[in-house]
Length: 115
Length: 116
Image (cartoon, each protein chain N blue to C red):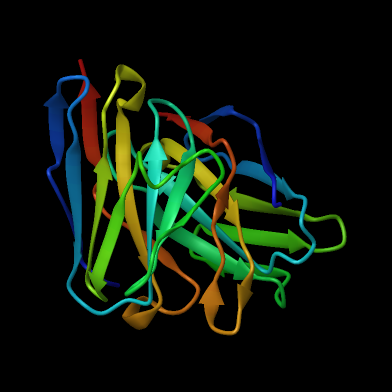
């Protein structure tokens, strides 16, 4: 089955710097890769996702890149702000026939943005 | 996206008892899932709640311990049976399909369970 590895487990940056979180997956059939942000005591919130037919997707200060050959995808946050501090989870799954398989999550990255 | 609610938001239970957690969505969704998140850990899928049929459980989770109902396209329940302190965790439902779109999953607010 699918296995998702996520690095680093913790990341500390200065406000205004960029942050990059990387994930690798094992199942080459996976074709959908979402990223979730979870603030302390809150539910995971979907912040961006990418499908395997796209190499990069951007939404304001966040972007995700996907390398299908190497089976890895990354989250990039530019101009970080203190409110970006949270735990970020990557996930992978196979979407087929309009139905989704089970999301397999990485172990999470705790991002701290220092003012 | 869909509005998802869970009841109860938290509970403290005695070992050996059972707790039923409800997940309600404000629109019809194709997929409903139940996850467990232990403190400081990632999310682990317990089962997929299938409307009108038995749930599909992941390895390590069994129906006798975590019975699930899905009577319609907007509601599901997860029961944690014969609880022990090891069951202390946050239990989250997620939904996908329908108005949320086929690919995306959105999470409910979670139920924080403490077993004494």
